[in-house]
Length: 234
Length: 234
DNA sequence: CCAAAAGTGTTACCGTTACACCCATGG
DNA sequence: CCATGGGTGTAACGGTAACACTTTTGG
Image 1: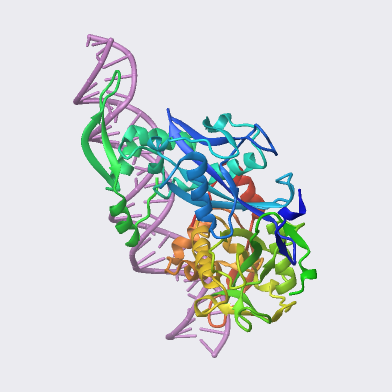
Image 2: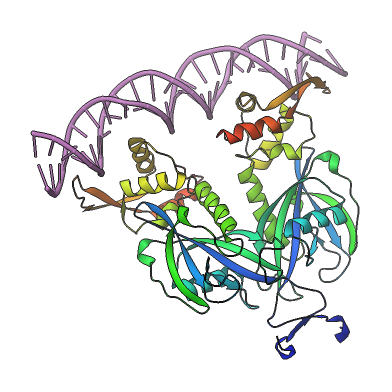
């Protein structure tokens, strides 16, 4: 690398900072994640989370949102900081710390667009993912644990379903993510009992069986209830 | 600053990285935090969390443990990553990102030692703390929220008590941190019912009343139970 | 009319809640 | 013997778990 390129000097060494985004989706009763294929070294050709170096005039949150937009064409979605990974050997280029985020997207938001330094963008079944670049396999484990924990006491599962959904849809979502069977009837009673679902009289047709009613999550009512001490729990 | 001091050059600008530690303690039925008084600019003379710049050859965890040792004389204590703060104006010296940790220490670990760039180290009642340096007041809010949330479903409250403690001690700890009264009898039953306390037949004397029995938390048994799907919950 | 999936109802059980009561200790 | 705080018991209540049953739909 030419000396003229090294324009930024400091009295002490500084690690470089990246932001990486674990993006969850849900389709065909499968938990999915969005990966990008690297078009540059290191790990050329391998799959990794969307992400990149943070800029000097943006927060980590802003960087995550920028990367989601640039590398995956995603905007206005659920995003939350996951953990900051700082192992010394996590990147072969040297000392690079990664602030990881996780995002939840609805099936309708699936507008994909490959960006700079990226060959492809693609959804993968979460349990089929192997050999990710960097320490991304480890980050994925942490992200799944967080999702499993949080979905039980915060209404974030709805962020993975379309604006309108059926109770069987929601039921399958919880069974898939928590990886255990949940009694159908009891699940219905618990969710409906909270009074946070808006009933849209429309119905979703089904191939060989009864049509299921459509609902949507009442965010406004939830915010009000939360302020009075209500706790969402499944 | 002399040019000769600027020895580290990079092709792109890099934010500086610090690690800050929110250290919780519990004494006299009060939740406390450990603060250091700054002996250098910026915020000279103001109180802040122990912390400092990360070195190139250490992880964030290692840096947090080093700072706890150097600035507060604390070793082998509970430590967990809290959140990474990256607001653009959080430090007047420029773009500095902070990876925040929170720690829990027992009263016996209170061996304080002021270090480099520090005038004093002192415990404060958590609700009396005001006007901290940087964005540390905000970090404190986040740390308290985390503690309140985590103490209910992870056995971390014991990290704030001596190795041996009484049930009334534990009861007071929970009431203080959760900021609500908890029925004495029911609390006893729930905790004892988990079978995770070791009964030491010794008793703690009391001024004008009955002596309370001493217990300790059975970490080994907890680890085994956790692996079989047991969930600690208060 | 049958299979498949949606939706409802019933009951036993268990943990929590809200108390009341008894016990040990020191003054 | 009394105040203080430790320790125990109990009955009502409410939510959960397990399961059976009914309804709708398309073939």
